[in-house]
Image 1 (cartoon, rainbow, N blue to C red):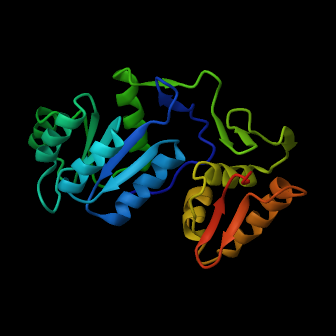
Image 2 (spheres, rainbow, N blue to C red):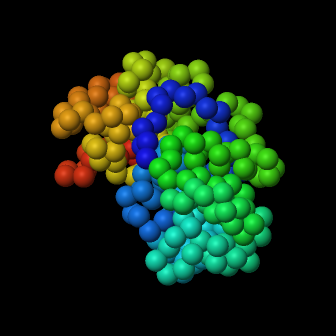
Length: 249
């Protein structure tokens, strides 16, 4: 699987028709794959939940009421087709993208016949999965493109992704392209601790071969620009990574 993500894709923000974040449930018994895929979807602006088997998938769907489901065909307690039948009882109109290691024509037909909306075989590109989900929801009339352009907001920190502008408290913050990408990743995951490895993978799109100090360096650059003379938003969680949080009032 290609786990890299093109930097600065400039893709317009997609939301539910009521303006809320799109909700997606990722169902796969491989925790590493589920984490990587969830990270890519969160980076794209989705609200994400994961489940590792059929029973927990149905329970999570009842709580989340997802707009889309990424569903592995082979699960430890049942198959994805049986899970889909249960999920349709919870969310009849939910968009379903099947994941499978089998790419025979009959397997694809079985997935679509079972009620799936699309089908992706492993290994797959993260970009392809995200793009297909976006396409499914647009065609189903369940999502719309933001009229104001792609903007991220955490507290008084605002990022206009299209114009590549960042302000804090109404004041412009000048950032280099790499600083912008790092801040974008932090802002797409507010209050979530991100490890150096996750940051390297998402921002630089490849492993620096252990040179994790580059993350520390760019975090320090960001702090000087985003937090300078203000209450800090970028925090270090010792032994775990970094987190961006709005200032408590």
